[in-house]
Image (cartoon, rainbow, N blue to C red; front, top):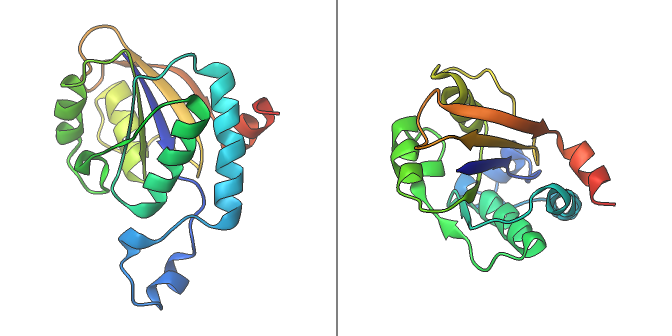
Length: 167
């Protein structure tokens, strides 16, 4: 199995959004974040051959990012899952992932949760050792059943480079 991990694109400022009185869960992408993610997704299309499933956190900014990626990669529909909500135990994500019968799974989520998740999948250590910039992506491969410490990092690419690949 291959797991493509993507952090959501640039979203509205957290403090300014808080002044609206709306939940942070509803905080959307900025216009620049939307535009940049469309370019980033074109770059992903040049290096990701086929995707079977795109799953996202239910938070608006992640869902918007997942929709942009799905459109660029030609994937119909995005699965919303609570295992990508920040603070969700990593073991819940692992259980969900093991239950997927797909060759290539894309997940869209948030920092620091994704950085901790990637580190845990690669090394078994539950600490943030991998930084995922907004719009960044990394590909982890599993030989057999996905589990903590069993992943192999195939690549990690910052958003600027992905945007250049899409030109």
